[in-house]
Length: 345
Image 1 (spheres, rainbow, N blue to C red):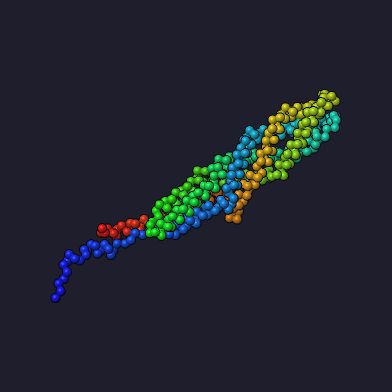
Image 2: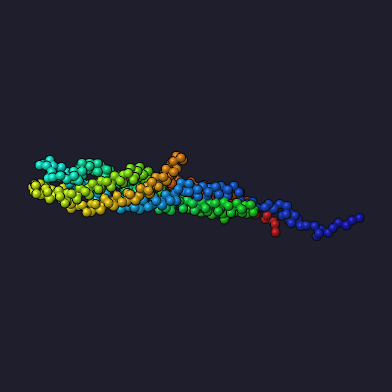
């Protein structure tokens, strides 16, 4: 007859129960990390595919270059210059009507003949600049354009890294909480850009400015304005060197008020017009880059500037939502694991 083993040789009940009933900690789901990688890749690809890096820099350069010409005082100076030119032409026409022109002056005649087109073109240009003062101020008050593509791409890199390292952590049986936290920070950074950078306030301002500047900022238009400038310089030279002298000799009583006012204003006037022609010529390429950037998203049904703020907000919210969705199972699993293993050693 066999003897039963002593009770001390059997495993304790508590040890038996803890070994059987303890549940392993749940780890974070893998799919949120995959989504973060995809979202990050899209954020990096978007500025590359739209050419945003070089085009945004050119847009910033154009905004900086036009800053002196958008001011109200500059616009009023150009309007006063045109008024003086109007008065000078009217003066010459009055002299021709009251006794005839004192000689043959081909450059003065060309100025008188071409000035209606010159005035219409230049005044239209000044009107376009004047009408977009508020739009320009809104655009220039945003975050620097050259920085914006980096503010998309860098959070994208963070999301790719968080997704990649988090996915590896999940495969190794870890929760990846740190990487969900990194994705959350990237999402918050994306949301902060349009809110602090004024992108939503500037969005409605971009399209009117592009539309109004499109006829002005072309190589053909710059060449036309340069031709007007040549006409005015030649006419003023002839007025100053020969016309007034001949008029004084032939008709000393003739009124020369408009011509005299032009001579008094000529130097600052030509400096202003030369500067305007120069900035137009220098920024044709920059403007073309801005238009190309704005049109790059038209296949999506929205222009780039109007959708720029949403281009940060939507991926920002998605990053936050995916990070929260991936973090929740890990935290729940942690609490459940702890409650089941309460009797373990």
